Image 1: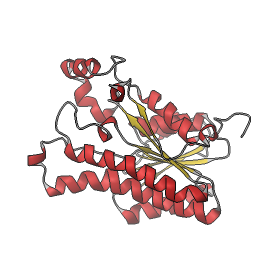
Image 2: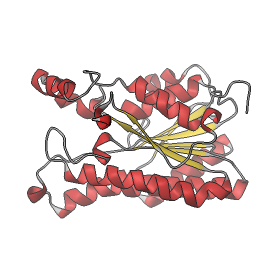
Image 3: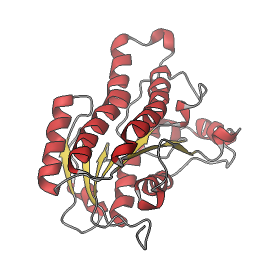
Image 4: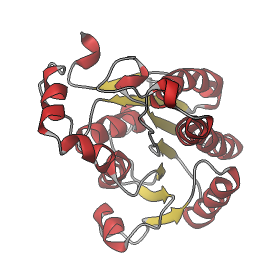
Length: 255
């Protein structure tokens, strides 16, 4: 193992959903550890956002829709052509449509499944094909959720809960399948995190109080706290860790 087990110097990291929230915080942590970081997002990433990765000119962004296989293939081709390869993939792109199960249309269901579950699979498959072809002993970190382990929550959210649960077992299955190739696959399962994704919840003091009350540490998480877990799982310091989902939840799942 390297003298600094958390150094990513010389590694290329691609982060889906990297334009904001947990994805951006994870990208910033990887960049601070020395990785060359590529932000993949369905929307163009502004220069000032890209600048938060540091002053290194090698960081860049590519527009990609994880729910569109052709778009994702083209994006990864662009990343590999410009960066020379991919050593780390963080699957952070996600969406939610919060409705009671009896009111969820097939179209809404498919929207969430295509982004959260299929998008995670497609990005992982594309990255793994490259890693296997080049003999890269890479790392993939998926973003699940405490809702991937729990059917509860503040409101009905069946498609989100289902897809985040699927990511937990996808992580296990891909870890076992790709272990002979030296590719590690892990995930993080955050609690409610102060990002734009839950801006509506954070704006409601009563909902925040409910989240705090059901969390043993009595607070929401900050994106940097999830990013630190992503960094660990992506780093050589986790070289013997694969197939696991690490809760970053203030003790929620320990109850």
